[in-house]
Image (cartoon, rainbow, N blue to C red):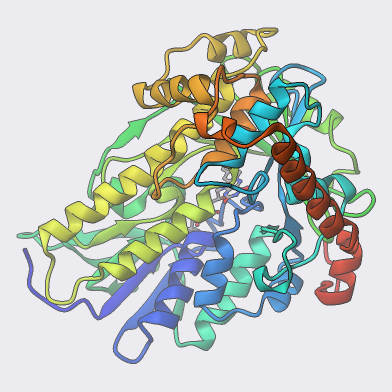
Length: 504
Ligand SMILES: Cc1cc2nc3c(=O)[nH]c(=O)nc-3n(C[C@H](O)[C@H](O)[C@H](O)COP(=O)(O)OP(=O)(O)OC[C@H]3O[C@@H](n4cnc5c(N)ncnc54)[C@H](O)[C@@H]3O)c2cc1C
């Protein structure tokens, strides 16, 4: 291993991943001890989609001390309380996967056990009515809440934003803090003949950029991690066969909803992401079951406003690099892997990659145990999300098209089968502390997709029938009171964080 201090950091790519990495490194490592350079090519451009997020992004903003209202204004963002899944279980059925909790956990066990006991003895209110985010989404309301403010439930949220504006916002943030940006197309990466470490990038006009440590955010092509270092790729399309997306923004119709909608269609699903100035749409499909032309035509016939551009086709293979960190290169974003955006996890995985790299950033040369640990942790994070995504396809009543028949009847990883078995036994998957999706997420999605648990935790039988009813009634009332007191989503934005100029 080469022994040196990594003071000269070069980030390849200026998409969401590149600028998130640049911002975090500039803020946390600083640009006095470290030189941070980002190279991007306008000629190549960025993927430019990636508009829906999960609540962890607020932590990224907090660490960078980003003012949330400014961030919402500058990215034309709206607030997101969860995802509505329409037609996933069967055509005509829909359910909501909310951020936040279902009810209130009691006596050391989760609320869902109490709800199951109550439902079994005739209680007829759907579990989703015990979730504040779902109730707010239903009523088109939004407000930030503090846990300390009252006994009423807190509102958990993420954002839906314009990916291009987000990268531009983070570029301003980074450049202000000393990140050097170079516009240019990289043609070649030169490696040390002995160690294989990347040392110099050669641009197409002959300029050369030297570095000690490289962060590969070059998108699907994986310029350094794959083309130079050949890390290899784990292909997961056996379980997640969608491989293309047609994306098109359209004019907004009405006030923006405080949630993302995913609608299942003949060969995949379509997203609808409302922003302040427009609506993002995309049909994620498998080209074995529908042609590109038909997918585009179907997408255009299903959007609710006038299209604002020609649809773009994006091609991908679901999976991840076998190693995220090889020699002095760490890959992030699409260069590190891609899981379809069904649960909006890509930007989160960039955030995980950044925080783990910062935590393990090498001081004096590379220690193989650190590199192995980083690779193991990133592998775990991708695998964890993978099983949750597969569950959306496997657990369904749909078999009405060859695509749905294929995914419903496919073999699934043992790790997921084990979770489904536990869930069928008693309504929880026993998610560990480190798993991204916890019991509320699994319950919302698996029950929403039609898997009914046979039993529940025995502790839920300990309280009396009257006490159970009283508790559930208190929780439901608290949720209603919380939501009724909230302003409409559009009103909240207008009063706090409306974009200065609504641009298309
Ligand atoms: C269909 C689809 C929908 C998505 N939806 C979501 C979502 O809702 N939520 C979410 O979290 N994520 C989503 N994602 C993922 C999200 O778009 C990406 O994770 C995010 O944009 C990060 O992309 P990136 O920066 O890795 O790559 P890119 O945006 O592709 O950026 C690559 C950068 O590398 C530069 N580059 C490449 N080669 C060279 C070269 N030779 N020389 C110089 N520069 C070079 C490019 O110019 C560009 O700046 C979606 C992705 C797809 C495909």
